Image 1 (cartoon, one colour):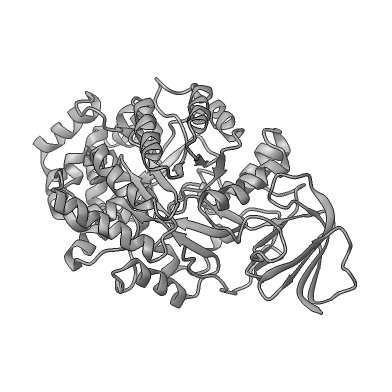
Image 2 (cartoon, one colour):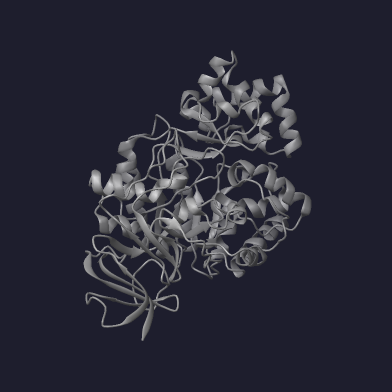
Length: 532
């Protein structure tokens, strides 16, 4: 037979964690045809690649992506694909782009999430999750994407953004939306319990919605209530829900923040092992940086965010309300609230993705320095930036320590993800997360073996998200492949200059089609929506 692609003489790392071997990978009809130590079995191929000196492995799976709307404006998703990502998991932190049926609510939802997901530069033409996936297929994108169905999305649809305890009927309506999303092909259910309106949800509410996963065995994926002061209670809440319903649980961007918890990564991982010993299937993902990123509005107390966008603007413009915001942040008046500004410190919080004339030049600077230079206060800077940017701004919070990052990375339960937000000045993880692991933590510092790093990028997230045809080089599975040079692969994106593509990622294939060849985007768009 004639193969579509034959990659020869490579170091084959199959994604399972097994040692590499020298061999060849053949591709036909979008599937892996064979993986062999023999050079080529005497077969012909339309495309032959001599991978001498390079690694051949499964395509990387971004376990935590925020490309939900970006893929409509940039179907290549080049910042992701050029670092070897062939599959992305969307619908994170409780915010899937469907199901949403209320037209006015969709406008409010998109405006609230603009700092996290950007804005859709076209008509919002879907309601159900099935329709959203159909729109993705119609767009013709480079990688494949799957989505979770979001708790916040269901809550917004039924209750809006306010601090409301649902009635039994309203809770059942929310559950029916989750059930609908799962039936439409969502690969799991997500929540983000630090974000409005999910921050108002009781444990009972979250548990009731997670129960919809039971017939499917799909994962419950969570940004837990706290990654700092109350992290131990937050972990207990999360894993108890998993135990109650006997469902897999997956922790988003696993980390410790705040001075009181930093340095306790060993204890954190002990909790994971204890959880697994209880018979609970728990996994996690991590980005390889000491700084996180999210929408700038997340710095505001929940009561501010619970209003519609116009009311939020009015609150931010009111001096008396600004004083209440300051006291909530600086005096920790709200029990259980994540309070990123309070725990991180204004000198370690940068404002990013700024485009207004008033603040464009401040993008990438920390709030404390801006306040000093403008003879202002951090709270006034926060409010003024959000007003000038029409709420569409992001932040980078330098709240982690390197020793915790390294310790968590060494856990064989933790996958790799970018958690990357697009925008005018993104976090460097949008462009560099996967090459950074391969260069810094494998080649330079020996934190991970090559085989283990690739397992954490491929078969581990595939298993956690139920992507049975991906993550391993095995005949019959999807031909998602990466060829990279382990001697030179490197991330070049930095906090000062984040929009830099990596080097050393030579070829990337999705379903047997090259989307990156010789380090450049080919223009091919073979990807689409994955339906569970």
